Image 1 (tube, rainbow, N blue to C red):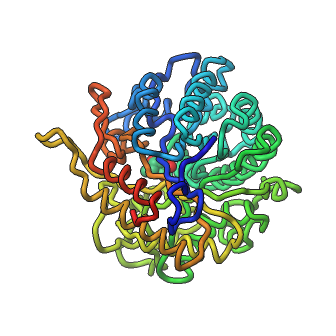
Image 2: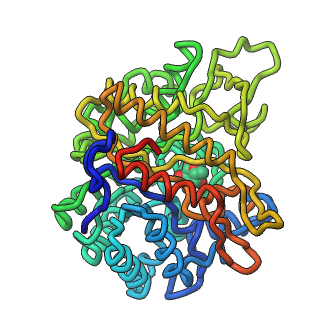
Length: 465
Ligand code: FCB
């Protein structure tokens, strides 16, 4: 495969820098009953009354399973070097070969268009039968995941440029099993910590299989690292249970002792067995970083009304296990339709921190973007100027980290290629470069898509996007 970046010469960005866009299987595919696909935890969750906004489900989503050729054509027109998508485990778990055939055709079409496939194996759609057997809090799920990874790698092997085992295991473990706002909707802090460990273990076990089957490919994992600001003790607490619970074991440091102490009242971590930390520390070629906004924290005084800017309300289960005395503080300034603050300096600081704490670990920004309530105007266009500003500022922040901070960033993926099923928020939050009319499936380029195409072109010519 021949990624196109760097051909223009003279670019301030490193040679071979990759421009891409990202999606995830359940958010775009639809076709939930086709080609033998079995149910996932997100089918169950989204069909449970009250779990998603307006009762939205991914049954049809953007119908990408049928419209993928049109979507690949858009990627080619955008000038993408790479496309990051995920494989639906429920299409493979069925044992029906047609599921993997779909991805095989997609990968070939990408390669024919000079677009490098970046494949994520788990973007949250656990087969329901594995949740019924205990889900991620159960050790055996990690081994099932490694078998699934091996199965996919046997078929797609070295046609894939970068293999990403997991997307945002923090969300899987803590939104899924502690806060209960994502599938499978459980609210059990001890189960969430066990899930975090088994996700780490799943990554390590799968990495071995993937590297053996695809030695020429790049191997990675994507984390949604929380960029934390505020009182040092509050920052330390959240950093442990949101960032270092993954980062440290993945990079060979094992679980941080402060995390074990902070969570001692919840679990004794008996689920970590001898040798697990070694397995988790499988070599990483790159680390995927998803960034949307920074988080401001302080220690709660225990008396005044509590600020819950992380979204959960008083009395509701928190995803931040063991952080009951931490307060998430509302931040001033502009916000996206998710209510997330817009602040590109957080991305720059996060990249600098990773560079400092993990020198020699190349980074790829595997997701960055913003939701707005975009609708076409009478001129037939979608004027999403806020999104263009968001991308522009965040790309500039990334460039500062690269040029001034010397951070090794290898690529940038916009979230998302097209509007899609935004989990618990259903279709109400639009993140796409491309607008989707959910009644008809019709795609329409927003102004940001035109802007991104020009920005990629300028970056290739060595001009600032
Ligand atoms: C990330 C997810 C992605 C999308 C964006 C907005 O946490 O990985 O699927 O929902 O947020």
